[in-house]
Image (cartoon, rainbow, N blue to C red; front, top):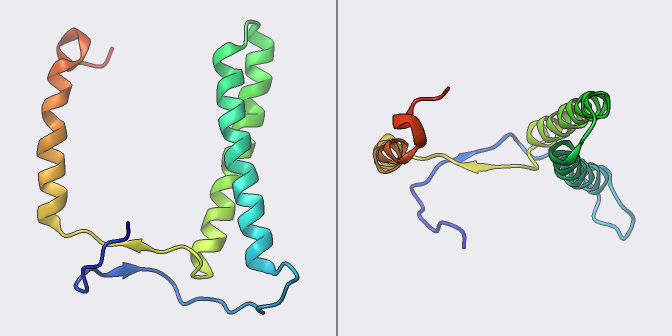
Length: 115
């Protein structure tokens, strides 16, 4: 459900217009490629968890990193063209969320310290 608060600011670049035709346009192609890259990074993550050989793991990690970077590049391209937008949050809501989740670190093993 989208936030209906009219005071909420949008973080978005001006939209690049694309033709509305039955044929795929630039936005459709980028969106399809981004979805594919997201699927691939998820699949490579699973493969990395299950790689039983060090050299295989290293090869998969290199491919994963390339795929992740391509995913980021596609996202940035779509954001620059105004095809992705975000809702800005006010500082009070961010602080409330931080305080809510900060207490969870005490539940981590080793007293919340990363080792």
